[in-house]
Amino acid sequence: MSEPTKGYIVRGKKRAPKAYPTGRVCIQKGCSVKLNRYNRREYCYNHAPIRYPRVRGRVLPENA
Image (tube, rainbow, N blue to C red):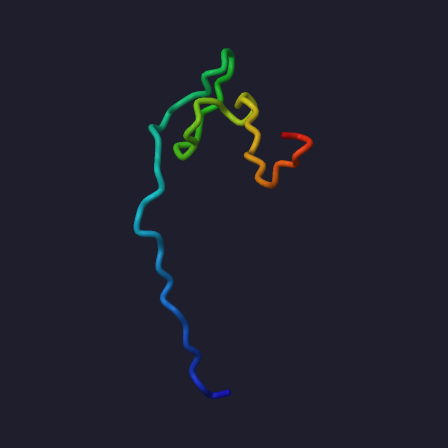
């Protein structure tokens, strides 16, 4: 139990996260929510259009 412990050097990402201009506001009429500088969308969470994920899998012959 007297052996020294070994660890690994934590290395971060080489590239900085993509940032957008500060001070942006949701484009929905009447909404004054300030957008985060890392949010790439033009809308806030409440007004963002619904986006459905791509569902992968087999296409059944009866549905094709």
